[in-house]
Image (cartoon, rainbow over the protein chains, first blue to last red):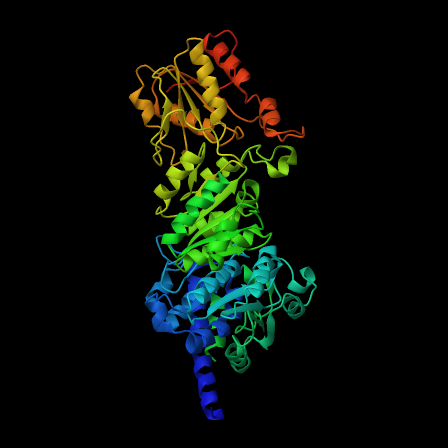
Length: 275
Length: 320
């Protein structure tokens, strides 16, 4: 693969990521909902997975051998909906109904609300166990698909996460890719003030193969995801991200876990993303 | 009953290659036959009930039909949120097999008892709750509910087959079984304490009280429509359960009667009192301490029916 091709790929992804961030901005502002910071930090991860790694046709047809993506940090669902629209799995007209009376797009994922939402999450610590179950079923059925599950860093304080990790390594689920959105902020504190252990050491201590990447760098993300599946599994990608990435006044600020934008802030944010 | 369950599960699994059994590091000398026959479909997830339910949900999302097995408090309470969201909210075909309901673990003390599980599981939308009195119930009900959509909770005893019916019975899912008939006074019972209820009814009949026994083996959906067929002659309903006062058979029956029956009926619920036992003893010892024995129930019922001694404040009448 020549450098030029890679550059074109990354340029395309940057464009798609902008599109997704703009869609999230509109959705959250229209809905006056929370969690825009959490959604922005995972945009680049979702963009590369959905544009380069998932077989979208199999997902659209809900084929048995489709790849699965589980958003365990369900509060960032605006990013999932926007990504599903940007790759044509759902109609982008649906996005304006987010959070509204009678809509199908809730503030946390609801299984099968639309194609591409595989599980109901929102209470942290559930998604990895479900992903383990799916990965086990697919592996035993001889399928060659991959199961992606995205967790928050704060979410890893839930004990159930480590119950799932223990089982995943014992079962050698090398079709399972665990991604941690390590944006260093959670509901009330910085994550490293509440969990002082080193993530990489923790996951490696449980027997996982770990990558530590810049979660906004498509080259690093691509390299890590391409490698996944080559060890006994599961693979863990610790994606170091910035909460609120893409809008300077949001970046690394805890309050953007909760706030939605006022009209002035909306214009500022939109202009920044469009630059 | 545990052995019967595994036997029935093996029969199902021989036909359906999608059936899986997950255990939470439990099932010694019970689940081995399944494990030996279907090794790839048996997983001991270890001491991790929350993960067990989540993994069961994941397997079900990928098209499997999953049974999870452990002791009642561990498999219903430790992982309640996972049952609520992963199973019930997503309405997945996962069957929760809880063993040793009530005081079955006796001297092991309250960490291993369950007097709240009927309430917890019944409170969940999409959950079906099955509470067999004996192996015969279980043998009848397992195949009947096999294709039911959504999660199911089976509340089993510990060891032993439970009391055998004196006569063959037709056990139908969601239809309480009239084991001993009466149109005047009915005892509604659920679970293994059926054996106590049976002796109660026999003893009362021996002293001339016309009473019957109904086995409520399906707690959710709770079908009490049969009451209407006896409404003209019905005088009293008593419930007996190895469960606490809140949210169990008694409270649910009382609620039903209040809302649906426009007639004065005597009602009393016999249940475990609202406390955790710090007294140590066998199941029978703890049932005695709870007043859930033949002598106490018979004496109380006699007093109520003859109006000799009845406490004010107890829910003794049901009328609109």
